[in-house]
Image 1 (cartoon, rainbow, N blue to C red):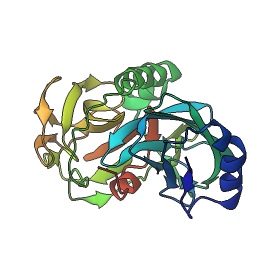
Image 2: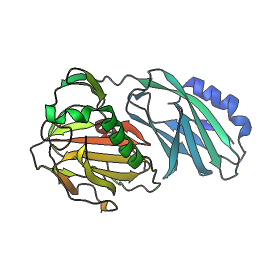
Image 3: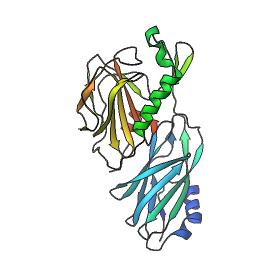
Image 4: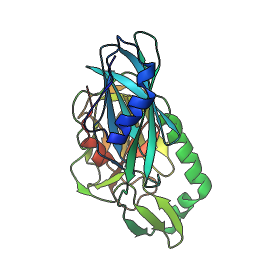
Length: 291
């Protein structure tokens, strides 16, 4: 076969493909790899599209993380989520592809992680909420959410471009470096959106509810599985209207805004996790997800 590489892939990656992959390619195979990005910022997601009628499966490895690939109209797609604290530099990317012939094709390239341009802020919590800054409370809650985000569902539940969960003034953005009460540092893993108490909160995309409960830091929280390892969370709610296992459609009212948990006023905290990695929800909304 001839392995075709998009012009968006750098010359070095093309040479690596020619030198490393071509000798292992069967003559009947026809596969193309394309980056739908020029670089990926910290805390954001890049899409790799792998097309070809002979392709049966693919997996990607980068930054010490294995990324699942999922079937799309003309092949498969991999969502490369970059952690917010990933060092800024170039990284190798390896994609293992299996065509119908059963041969194994390993494609090697590189991509660039760029700065996320995160801000800093000072937050003062009242004394009755100070215990929510304890390391053990933080660790327990992070572990509970990580467990919810860990399952990768191959079913794609969403159909349309994602929408905002409510219309409100933006608050603390994703990745903010917070200093609480003058001494305790934390990173903000979501996007805050201010709204009056009791404002309806919408499902940003269709999916299946996997968590709906009261938590210490996030307060009244809902987590939705959208498939492909993509999850969204809606926290600090005053009311929850959905239960685990329930299917929701984009735009459904799932709860009401509030100030439960580690909060200083009415708002929602909106998170998006991709393959277990926290990503910028507002940037993810703009991502052209393949279908």
